[in-house]
Length: 522
Image 1 (tube, rainbow, N blue to C red):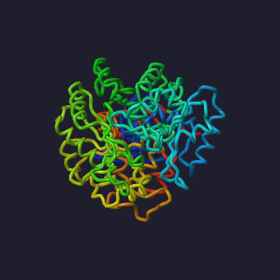
Image 2 (tube, rainbow, N blue to C red):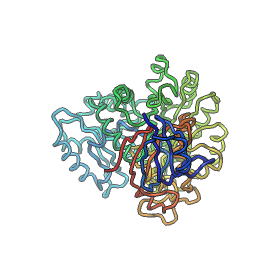
Image 3 (cartoon, rainbow, N blue to C red):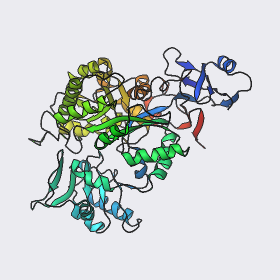
Image 4 (tube, helix red, strand yellow):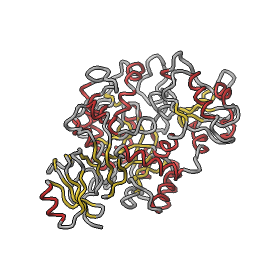
């Protein structure tokens, strides 16, 4: 393969020693030289292929530190309830989608948010049964921590009035003790085990095109073992175009240890990531673990999905086997307990433990995270989506909420992602949220809790080098410098020079992974 020179670009390298360049030389899948065009062409030698980027801005390939790519790929052809305004509209949308499915198929999708429905309504299985009496339906809420199921789905999962609540979960019941079809946290696990797509490889193959078009070149995937197998099949067939750092589900930890898996093991396309553990639920489902009750819900402090003693045991087991830990924690009590558990286990050389989401913390816990080297894997759009919920449910709580500025000032490593399909996987929406703390329409003016805003450079770093550091891959990813992987994107808006609103509307022009153009706008 000849050396390629990508030229005529405003290149923001992310490399503090050489932050701006106009050209890059690529030799194979690595960068050979980065600088002005004369220097780069001299390093490339005669005969190098020239690729003109037409003055576009160039960034290191964006890295999503927390995404459910299997769920995202499935959602592309599933029912989408994010925009519905009430129960009746949700049911009509489900009915229209069901009419297109073959008999016996599962109805995938969901992402409903009853907190915003007008008039207020609590979904249940009886409502779903009116439009889907036979097809099994299981619809995760927008935060993914509650599932709304119909009677057919409950029967297939073996959930009835005699089924006890599992540890860390709740089967919501009516006055007669019958399941209503609302399953919170671990109670939905039997349904999730059944909701497996038979063509996941093809779905992921199509889904990666969507992600490449958004400027993503690497992902930390948080989905299950079926997703792992599908990605490995794509890699072995030479069809994988973006790099995957693949988490291990908690329920598969022992099997992964027996197989000899270790975090970081693999090749440049597919590596084993951390084990994913749940500490609590989510704010939208009123299940995140808090120190104080939710406003108007005296006694409800959320759900401790994994008890503290189990956290310590699981952390120690994973770390002892060379597997990093990524723990979901949203409420301040959950975050405090997770930090306690990491402290009890101690640091493990070569492993970077993480808190996923880290949304609401006691202010004193920011310094503790920094001192223990715990990565904050956060999703900026969660902040702007949750403004009303936080103001209503957590009123009067003394919290550091979505505290990106506080994290960085304390010395915590930030890694940004999307949590798609809970939110859009568009990283430019995340950059906008991180620097404005405002909704897409600009409200609230000046941003919500604006003291926690980041600069654009800090936000881009969290979505590139920060995510690479969280994975232990910063020796080869996250900046554009000689010797690093040739993963970069050309975009039509320079985030360092344009307004945040312009950045939010950025269009990717070209996505390069491993020196090859993997996606290009036509």
